[in-house]
Length: 451
Ligand code: FES
Ligand SMILES: [Fe+2]
Image (cartoon, rainbow, N blue to C red; front, side, top):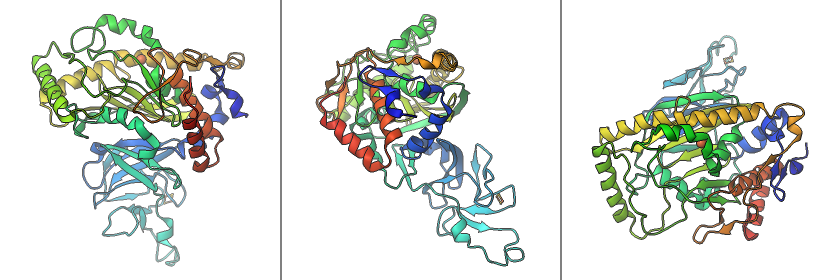
């Protein structure tokens, strides 16, 4: 399939094949999910040694675990003997992973093994194998690049990939604002509750492009706005409205976010119905003004890091890890963040609000899920898929953002962020190596600004 013809950035059209085609999906798993930095979890999911959760990286199941020495490991969740899914639980704590099929076992304990995930137990090693099995060579496959970025765990299979910092570039301002303490201190957020996980019969890219900058779909949320689930009793949220969208065209990331500034905007009192919570946020805001001084900062934004991690940095404060299962099936994981040292009353108020807003039972998110599901379904037919989707809003109107390298401001209503996302999608789908991907990024940086 000719990738180039599917994404027409000059015309602002994108083929429906991207959302329904099996062959393209397979290629995405190879070209994108085997090379990009992917968010696999949060450190709070594996607090103690030997804690683990089973996560995903594109088409592969992986085990995210904290070893006995405290280091975080990402291991491919497949037995090296005959491929059995090694760990079939969602999460737990174990000193060794033992395969239910023939009983091979693997360990991450540095006192027993040199390499985390090493094969330690083989039934019949002496009698059946006659000790002729190189256990060191048959350990679990370990992801070579794993980092903890302000609590979120990211992993990348490609040894040629740039560092995570380079991968996100100046988009870090938006990600940091979502992950940092509300008073501006680095990190300091905790994940509350468990992971909401659910499957949606839609293509994964609907989720990415919704978070990256779709201000236009507000009409979908009219009913929830009328119900008024915001903590102040009106609308969906109280935090001030964001007036623009920003894309990082060379990297594929983007946000519904403010431009960088040095002085805090007016304090908008949220949680009017909860005086203790409001008092907390007021004090946190004052601390933020003091802590950040005249350092550059952005407001709490909503955004996507290419390809499939999205965040909601304002109310409610959440991270979505989006796992593609098939061209028309996606598993969404959502976690919720609060300031780690905030009083319980604040955590509780946030938790209640998050649950009414987000996830499969949330009033706002269920609107979005309905849109993505029906758009996928109505794009599947042989006649329907001949007609491209329209991404022409705001073509040719982007402007460079002073102070943020490689950023384009696209305005409040524009599909510029989505176009930047699909530009990067096309580059990933065509490039043979990270060298070519870096080259494409450099070329985009050189061009002035994309519309
Ligand atoms: S498949 Fe795991 S031990 Fe055989
Ligand atoms: Fe929405």
